[in-house]
Length: 407
Image 1: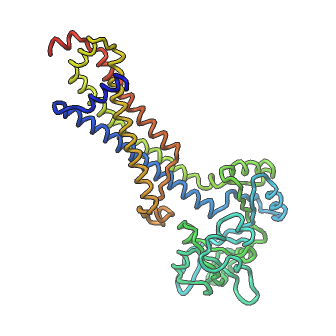
Image 2 (image 1 turned 45 degrees about the vertical axis):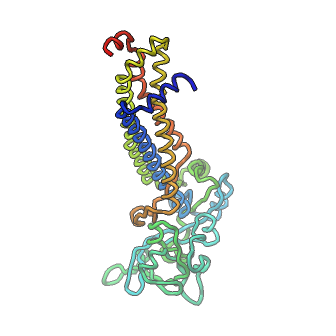
């Protein structure tokens, strides 16, 4: 152990006469620990929320949407060309339309999505989200209405189960009557109920066969094509390649563009929370400055004696720098351990529940990235180190003659 480290530890472990300075040092350690712990928890909360929403969104929807101005003329040809592109793992045609679904006197708005079950399963996670029934049963039948798969919350609102019928009303293709335009409707048999974990889908989506959707909305061809890519973070590059390869008539949007406002808001919240809670560490650093200044004033006689015995100004400065670093490191380690423990408990037992209709998820997930943790720990130590600069310089400049004269 070096001389400077030995003296720094002895000064921190103050005796009865300097108990007040020791108390301030302890408060500084606690302040750093609380700041680091709070910052880690906040970052884990925002990162977990962002990751969970992203995973559920890209699982419930496609990675890239492709449509053409004026409509897709030859869907089979475009599907073949898109599947041949690098990074494209799956492609499926889609018809989308809005309407009202009714059952037993209860109505609710619905987004109807016409799909081909065998292709849709390779683009979204709808196949793995079926809780009751089967997705393949939406195929049109000669002996009754076509099938429809409803979201869990939507089925609960309509009080329907698998095997029961619902009516879907749409404005497209309505008939003109003396009372005005009458909406068009078709009956469907509920053949499945899904739960994707996103309130928007579970409470407002229904899946029917592509051919049934074309008849329901008076379409002759699919409106757009969905794509799934091997790496979702390369979706934007795939969308750019489609626009370049297929021509200006084709429009492609990736999942990030479709949900840009949501993820920008989450990123802004993450930065705002990080800066706000990071001020706690700054306050703790001010406590370190105060405790070291008081210690310099208290130990002026000791500093003078050390200088008369041959200690250099650099050595004196190093003593007080080490004191601040010890406070910072101990507080940071304690805060990191506490933060990681709380993060694990909160995420493991799903303790924080939130309303699904507001946040799209049932509980708050916590996920701390290694980079974020390292940045917080390094920043806390650096702030504590910077806080030692002024007190340590004042201690090194102390004149032994002046200090001993008034002792």
